[in-house]
Image (cartoon, rainbow, N blue to C red; front, side, top):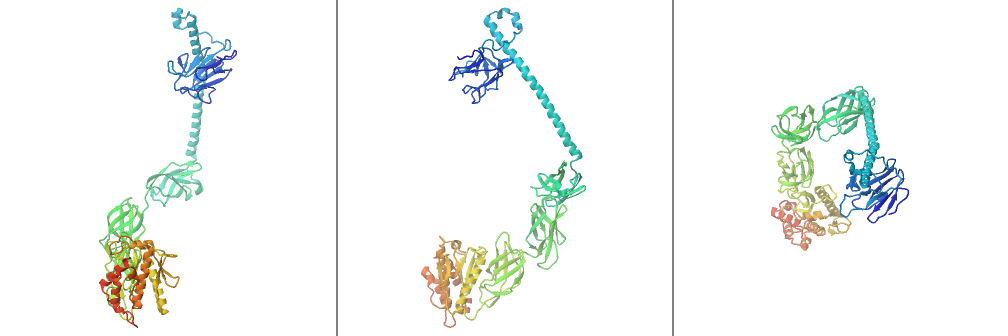
Length: 638
């Protein structure tokens, strides 16, 4: 063991650091532990990073346990703090532990540290003086008494000042709290704003409320009004009145309102925030006395709901937050006349919405009042658009293509009539969801029944008009099924554009005394163009091709055609109809792609004569079964 002849030393016994010595100096403190910051590092799993602290001060040499998990022992006795004497052994686990860690022995040269004064004999020693007569026993008792004395003196040095310091600290904190509370109290009592009332006590977001109080900031910008956790700047301030706009809040209910200025915050006053009361729509938009009508909107659950129509009270059937149902009262007026509907909840009124007198869908006007197949007709009325199902229109029982639709206006394309008369007063019906219009102004559908037939293209409905698809057709039969809007707003608008382009090409050919031919193209786009020109009349899209998988009115097919195959078929159909109507030759292009018996039957039904061509009368009187076969031919792409 290495020793110093002048200074106390700590010596490790056992383990890889056996005989490691650390001298101590007056006033020094040594940390013994397994951590890298320990002055005497002793590695072992049961030794804490900073297990004990050994100090040499004016009391002598002592040690303190630093709150270790396993504890500290001196000469086999558990200790938390102890005076150290020459030869004492500091261990870090209980005696008898298997595989104990190294220990630290204390060596104090004689005379370096003064021995503590002797203590008076204990009561046990007085009763049994012989027990302390042995030299070894006397030394042991002396050491124990010395450690106890040092520990007591150390506790007096450390604990008492700490308690005094704690009391002093508490006094300082208490004084600071008193001062702070006093300052805040002074500010609240004599400087912070005060709010006494809020008017009105109920309001919805977006409305202005007035706060009555005092000590508001002179400028509106100096006042912040808190509605719960949402803040807004004051709108105006004048003397004891301040106004602010209720912000949008998550849900309704009671919220605290506080005014904050640079001097502090007021006490809260409560505001009942109401859900916004608004009327959005009527369903239906036209009704007769006794009909049930729903007023849709919000805020109808904040109190009893009253409804008036043209100022007359209506019977409320039921109300919930988003709608109120009422019965149309008896009112006077012409069919289609409009009357204001107003709902009142807890003194608040909705903006007026107009309900028309009649049964929706209600058609009020038609423009023009006559036209041929393919003409665009504008219908005006009320409740023409259904929110739950497509709106469809029929002329004389034949579906018409709806090109544009709104609640008050429809633009439809007059269909090809099924009857052969020159003029038909065609009753038309608007179907809006489950309801249908019962009356409408008349429309006269015209057609040529004399003279020579001129091939003309028009837009037409597919099926009953509810599929969203559209045909490019002739007065003979449909030809091209469009299922995609492409660069138009809808397939219907696209059909109108394609029909107009084809008609323009036909007019140019007739004026020039020639014929027009069409061809399928794949560059730069897949579609149909005019032979001998760069003109492109219609594109075939994958969506168009997919529409032929489930054609309207026919069974589904196994797989749709490709866009390129569809372009070839469209070009063949256009060319064969041109041949039939302008030359009398046998159509052959569709037959080259697949069965085309219906075209041969059409050629027989529409014989072409030199000088006169095909008679209009023949077209007007085509048999319905042949028209059906021609429709199937157009939809069965090989």
